[in-house]
Figure 1 (cartoon, rainbow, N blue to C red):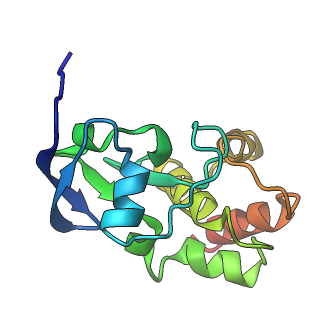
Figure 2: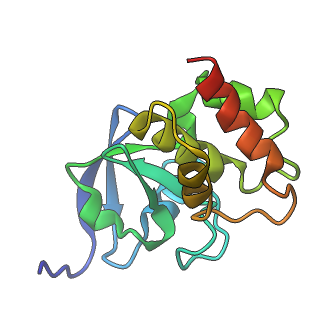
Length: 155
């Protein structure tokens, strides 16, 4: 296991751009993305990995950035909601009203994007399983499910 002391300069590949940042060993990826890189799509919700508002892709897999240490992200490809501009799933969320207050939306879109990349036509169980990793207090998930199904139907 690596140990880190003091501040360290690291390179992060975020949305296909390389950023050099100085981090402390205890800083989370979420804090670096929001506070130092000004990528505010990932949101701080629970800050313990439960709600999914901070979901990003790390090497194309959804991960909750609030529980990822920034120093451990060197050499990995990180994609935030800002890196998913003009994707079919973003448009589907708008068309099918997969949001209400919007706070959790970026995490859901990132997670849904990963789901749709992993499975060409995910079934109902797979969709529900993936949606279980994110929480929404407003929508009841129907619009989110409709958005995912719209992308599936248009493949």
